[in-house]
Image (cartoon, rainbow, N blue to C red; front, side, top):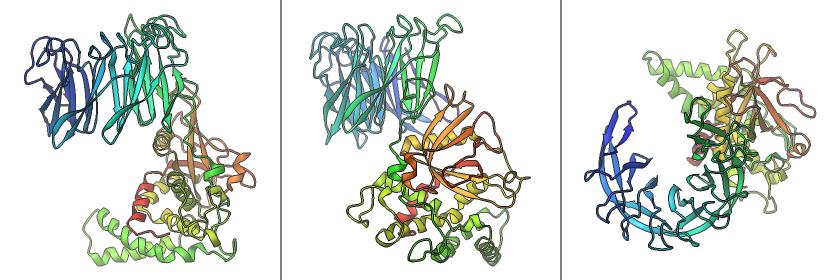
Length: 584
C-alpha cells in the first residue's frame, strides 16, 4: 500500500494511512496541506463508488499526531472517475479533481468537486465542469485553490489549439455559488502542448505548466505560463522557459508563492540521464520578459501619482502659518516614551532592578534622546510622509480632504485645506525615534562610529524589500550615512521602495540589485523626469552596499551608503493608530 509521510517541525516522521485502506488504492498519489489539515487522494479506491472511482481523506493535526477526520467522495461518483487524482486545500475549502468522470461531456471529460468544512463536518458544496466540456478533455487532472478562486487544468482539451493542446479554467465563488470566470489558453498554444497538466494559484496570479511544449527547445522541452487577473479579466503576462532548455526536459511542474515560482524539469539530463532539475523564477511573473531573474512586476505605486505634491519640510516658516515640528511632537514624544520605552527597559534588563531605578534611567534616557542627535529628533518629515503615502496608496485618500482631490500628488502643502494630511504626517513621523523596533533598525542602518560600522547583508535586505512589495505594493526603506564617509554626524532618511530589479538570473546569482524609490525630498512632479533608484551591491556583505551616490536628483547631494528594510514596524504603527494612540 502506498502511504503518505508528513515531516513535523521536530523532524519527526509520521506515516499515516487510511482507516479503510486496501491494495491498489493509490493513497498518497496527490496531497495538500493547509493550517494543520492534510488532504490525501486515493484515486483508485473502489469503496464505495466502484473500481477506480476514487476518494480523498482529510486528516487533522493534534500536537505530534494526525487523525483521520473524514473520507470524501463525490455524491455522483462512479467507477473510473479517478476522484482524488488531484487535490488542493485552502483553509476550510477542499478541491478534488476527477478527470475520469464521464457523467457530463463524454468519456474522460472530467470534473472537480468543492467541499467545505463547517463545525468539523465536510460537505460537498459544488461540482465544477467546463462550460465547453467535451470528451477526453481530462478536466480535473490538476487543481489549485486560493480563497474564493479555483483553477482547474484540462491538459487534453483540443479547443481551440488542437489535440491535447490543453487549457485551464478559472472558477469563482460568490455567496457559496461557483461559476466559471475564464478559460485560459496560451498565446502561442499548439497541439500536444498539454497546457494545464500542472497548475498553481497565488492571489491573482496563476502559473500553468505545458510540459510537452516544443517551443523553443524541441519536443517535450516544456514551458510554463503566468496569467494575472485584474477586475475579473485574466491575461497572459509571461512565458517561462529554462535558460538551458533542451528536448525532453519535460519542464512544467509548477509551484508559486510570495513572488517566487518554481518549475520542475524531471527529464533534465544535465547531470545524468533523467537526473532532473528545478528552476526558480523571481517576481510574481518570474520577470516581465519571462526570464529567470529580471524585473519585478509593477506594484501599482507611481511616485507621480502617490507621491506628495510638496517636498519634505520642517522647521519654522517654510509654510504659512509657521510649522515647528519639534513643538508639535514634544508632548507626544514623552507620552510614547513612557508607554513603550520604559516598559521595554524593564523587560530587557539583564538583572532585576527596583522600579525607581528603572524610572530614573528612563528619565535620563529621555533627556538624552530629546536633546541628542538631530537624526533622533528630525526637523524633516520623511518618515511620516513615507508612511502616509503608503497608507493613502493602499486605502485611498481620506474623506477629510477637499472632494476634488483625486491623487496624493495633488496635495500641494501640508497646511490649510490639507491640514489633516500635515497632522497625519506629524503623528506618524515622531515614531522615527520612539518606536522601539524602528530605533533598533535605525542603529543598524547608521551606527554611531566608524569602529562599530557592521557589514550589511544586502541580499537579505533586498529579499525582504521585494517580499513586502509583492505583498502590499510598497516597502519602507531606511538609508543612513556611513561614518567612514560622513564622520561628523549621523543622518537617516526614509524612502518608499516600489520596484526591484536584479542583474542576474536570480537574486542569489546577481551582483547588483536596483530598488526604485519614492524620495519625499522631491515633489511628485519631479519623478516625470528623474526616477530615484538605489543601486545596491548584493555580491557579499559590505559596510557600504549603496554603490552609486545613492538617492540623488535636482538640488540634492546624497551621503547615504547604508540601508535596511524598515517595513515590518508599519503594521504596528497603523494598529496603534486604530487603537487611538495616534490621532491625525
